[in-house]
Amino acid sequence: MPNGTHTRQDVWKLNQWDPTILWFAKAIADMQTRPFTDPTSWRYQAAIHDYTPADDPNPKVAMPSAATQKTFWKQCQHGSWFFLPWHRMYLFYFEQIVAATVTKLGGPSGWSLPYWNYSDPGNPSARKLPTAFRAPKLPDGTSNPLLIAARAPGVNQGADVSGAADVELQTSLSKQSFVAQPHGGDPGFGGPQTGFSHNGASVGELERVPHGLIHMDVGGQDGWMSAFDTAALDPIFWLHHANLDRLWTVWMGRAGGHANPNANNWRNQSFQFHDATGNVVSLSPAQVVDTTVAPLRYQYQDVSDPLGPAVAAPLVGLQVEQQPPPEMVGATTAPHALAEQPTTAHLSVAAPTGPGLVAAPSGAAQRIYLNIENITGTGKSTGYEVYLNLPPDADPQQHRDKLVGILPMFGVAEASRSDAQHAGSGLHYALDATDVIRRLQANNAWNPTDLRITFVPRRRGDVAPPGLSAARPGGAIQVGRISLYYA
Ligand code: C2O
Image (tube, rainbow, N blue to C red; front, side, top):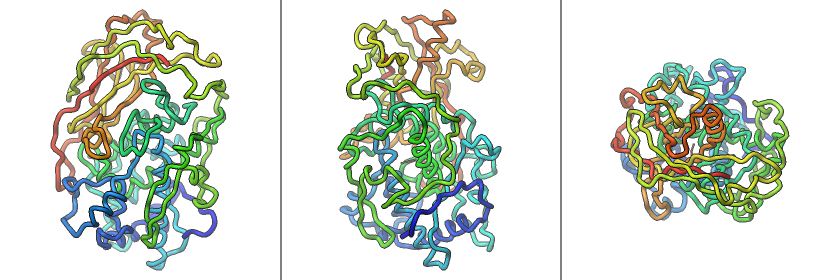
């Protein structure tokens, strides 16, 4: 157990083999020797996030009991207002397990998980994988457990993992509300109100960008970071999530009255984990909203606002629950199949008549959300860019002003499976299309009877990287419904 407050450091501000990084590698190697039935083993820790036997890249070994698996595995919370608190708890116990392993191996006490700030405008290497995670060997010549072969082409060669749009923070950090509006509206910073949700309703803005995109950018089509059930086997997963956890603190600290949900069904939802000795422990969101006090007691090296001081947003006078529900003004009636080439769907949009006409509270500008609902399938795509009224055969790169948002396909296979815990209704993204639509209207390029929505697939990885035993079957991906809402 850590004594006192400890600090999670920016990995790019550490030397390649700073003790924090080197001891992480050594602890992973040690955790990898533990049996799968040991809650502190590397593989058990990853299975807490998600586990599918068919995607397990490791040889078959003795497994924990079905009851244990049911209680502790496949717990990750996505498409839910539990996304941030659940991953915070998950990292907290993981960090303790690594720290205990480091001291057992003779290292320093108080090991802290570093974070990967891929959005750092002051670091030209920010979007490259930190060097220790792509080095073949540790300094002593042994193999490096931080290097995972199953990543997108170029990532391990030091290419930029992603473009600037994939790590932009303006969209998420300027969200006023933590919680999403009801169906069709603002996805919020932290996601929609749900029950226990391994995957659920619309995805919160931070979970979409940069979270989902970084997963797909590192993992590519087939790599470990690209699927729930293998993501946490890649050590960079933990630094990615430490950064998201840090961004939650950054968002809370911004001007504009940002607040966590105060509903009891958010604050008191309990989640179970194992501590460093393998004992069962539990936490609820109310216990983890402030990282600097017990039980968490950690802080981040830098929680300054990357966007500069926030312009004090007009205070929203009504709670989300009191606002008029978002009004749907158009929806497709048939599923739309996505493909390896751009595809276009058409939507007829009516003028708002009901709640959409009511002025937003406190004069806040009314927003328009393009909803991409029920995205399901087993197809291999890292994601899609969504454009409005892109001219036929145009180069999308020349029309970035028509880009409404990017849809990461992280979790699409898992969200499509129906089983005891999940409805299988797929991914749901709500994109703020207000600015693009206002521009189209100003340029006389808006025809409400024919709004064209073009899905441009993102670059495909070349070949499956080595190290994958089970290639996921390539199938189709389809969108169940496209809808436009005023909120
Ligand atoms: Cu639970 Cu980044 O995933």
